[in-house]
Length: 410
Ligand code: PMP
Image 1 (cartoon, rainbow, N blue to C red):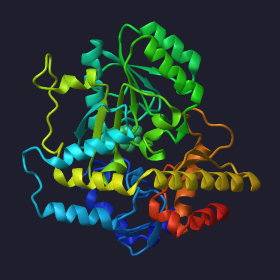
Image 2: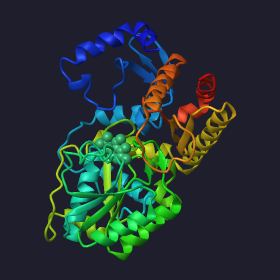
Image 3: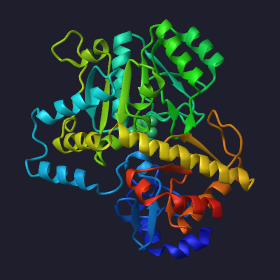
Image 4: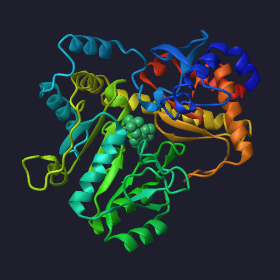
């Protein structure tokens, strides 16, 4: 399959050769890699993307969840170009940021006060800084397999070298272990940070009883709870916190909300977030040249107009049905595939059975995953190399039959 892939994509192969002269690994985004070389994209429209060798793909990746509206959404494009005409980096306050904050709070009511950032990574770093200052404690409880951004990667077993704070690990969906860890370290813990569904580890869904225990224990020991909803905020109107009825102290957002532009937000209890008021006592600095850039602010406001409650229900119901169909195919054909996830996000695993926590893949799973990925490309379906599938609004209209057929053929 690899040989066929190389023969089929000479321009991408050349582009990769050129790029490795400038970027370690050939890219400025770590996630964009696969063997023998990744494809280089030339453009996208709606649910389609094209590569530089002229192949068209049905985009079932949606930029790892950020392209929820599909590519080149006309409403967002219009707002961005009309805003552009009025100047971009103005260096002053603007009215759009306040109206965006108002729209966000009407959806995520736990975000009493908020700050905008340029990425999800930054939002999580700021969230942690705020809780450490508020709680006057230093450590953060994280879950193995979690990914909270470039510097906040807990996916490997090694103590991630570039994490800018000390942390204690716990195991996702393991209530007794969580109880032991929190009880033992409660006096040192400034925060517990959690993705309500583990994204990078493979769309691993949190059990309700587990998340309820996370909330109960953090409240009992007065440890601020950070919900990283950078990805999961798209899975329900108001994020998974609203769906599950759990109110965290701090929420972080990003990805799709910027309509394709870089965006992040951190918000939560006024008592904690007010530390960023520079006129208040013990103020924490959170500066950032592009925090209120008008293009992103305008685009994000438009995204909230487009992706309302009705649209969120439709997209995520579609995802639930699709996952059921795909798991049905896997069962019927007795293949070693299974699909996990919530609503519009899912991941193909090369194993059967319940998947409740991150796992190390066996060699046969790694090989099968690569074949699955390259096979999907041959069938004209663009997914994540790790098996990630993320639906966008235009995909519902264009129908996901292409993906179902490709999985059936596999
Ligand atoms: N949190 C989660 C759960 C993520 O999946 C990611 C990115 N994949 C981030 C934070 C970081 O967001 P960004 O890439 O915008 O820095």
